[in-house]
Length: 248
Image 1 (cartoon, rainbow, N blue to C red):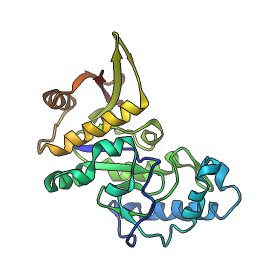
Image 2 (cartoon, helix red, strand yellow; image 1 turned 90 degrees about the vertical axis):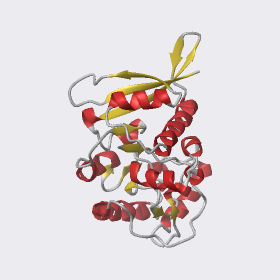
Image 3 (tube, rainbow, N blue to C red; image 1 turned 90 degrees about the horizontal axis):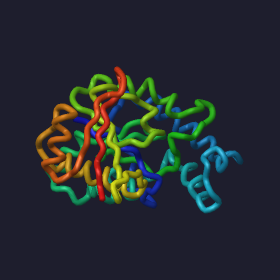
């Protein structure tokens, strides 16, 4: 089982150690291309507009300029924000932490794919950016990420946002997780609550030794853990299943 997560825009302020070899070593070449392009962009006057940064975020441009030599920290400590706060990787038991490192894959516009134990420096780059000279980053990463993940066996639990989902579509072996809030018989999507629930569901799935092997087994497992879920089959061949997690 793989749990696919987006990164978060919120990141720890600084790292403490040197960048080390990352998992998914076959992505080294595209990683270097994106890294070099980002650093080059951040030495130009176009950086703020291309990266879509507000005036209050321009300090991230300076940080990006130093990425080649910047100190790194574990992915488990790098990403902040609602999803990662509720996932709480730092507070997992040692056994669950090891499972998290095997089961969780974080999609990154800069690094492609990351495991929680990988070490990278804080950076600013989102998958929706058109980064010169490669353009759309989801399209740039898609061939390399597909080659890396296509051989993976078992169930795919997809918690990604749309921008990161565009970098790889795992097909019918995947379950795309949606979160809906039910109030007065009506169901709506609430972004903050959706991120929090995806974080708690991800935590639940690394705390248990058992690995669900199918979409129906995933729904049954989460129901046994107290979640209210509704599972729908693929809308067309090659598309993922959908599992709604209903919260009130």
